[in-house]
Length: 286
Image (cartoon, rainbow, N blue to C red; front, side):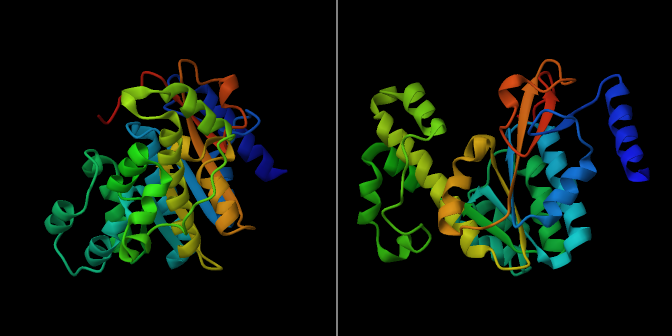
């Protein structure tokens, strides 16, 4: 009973703040304390943290969750991110191991424009605490190739290139709602077929799912950062993980940017196991 009252007090205190920066909800739309997310994340095999790339609350929570998971799990924690491409794994490993200087890593890896503010703290936390960090995304040149030429174009790659990709041909369910939405939105855009745009999204999801599956070992917990569209509604990466490594305990987190965060937007219900509601006017990192 004591723990229940403490949880209720935390929720009540959060709601009573004049201008809360965020509220955390479960899939049903009930406000929950951060401690509930941490407990669930500690017990998961893989956590997919779906972010809005320019939202500072996402990045702060990612760092906070990383630090708290490390307290609970130590070196059983593994970080992974869409923001690093699979062919940068070597240079990322070299930096984490202290073999190369930071400026060499940042020049040679294809880091995002918001790396310094949003992802560098996580990479350096991994370096300081000797944690593995998986570069999970497909190299962008291959995704662009698929967008123009279709999935079949991947078969033309050399064996060395294929080693960082999931087994070809990848399975693809074009009836998944997230993929159907892309087809509707992107049909005929810039001369690229809607089918190829869906395929380009799918090969990103498949590569991330496959590399996470390959990196996971019993007893490990992988915290993966990705754009929320890649894991919302338990599709995308989730769909592929369930095929490449069935039976994993998966936990998803998403974000809902909305004018009023005191109630979860209806369209955000059931989007993930936990949803971070953030004011729509929150300052952006870029």
